[in-house]
Length: 214
Image (cartoon, rainbow, N blue to C red; front, top):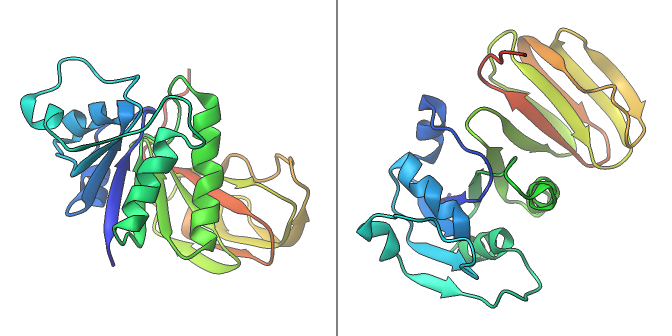
């Protein structure tokens, strides 16, 4: 398996879990995502984008990273171009670091939808901000190692059928769920979380650390 970390421009905090997830991976930065290289003490092998959002005061080892420059008016976002560069280099597994939040909600949505498409094509994908992470759900059954009390939601990108959730405070048994339903928002892990999906497109969004609600 060839695992790459893609540094995107969304929110990111450094955690011990995130350090483990990116350890030993090859790294590509997408434009403003280079700021996370400093946060995570990583040096990318490539920096991709139109460079309209270059972070200020980067150390010399980061400004010296080889660049792949694209025009500002292009058909793909910097993030999608960075992902394409990783796939061209043989990536079979991706950590999309900085995939959530930030100034561009449209980019964050793209990362969610694109991750599902990539997973369907056979690429393993993890989206993360450090505080929360997303994993595409494919047809079939999958298990997840989260501690009891971990908050999670299942985001549907289409109608879902045959959805079963066990190891949760509110389990579900082979249900049909309409696109746009809030039924699978804000559940909690209780035991070994397992999710089975008959058909449809969805993503598991989990908060691996306790949240303090205001």
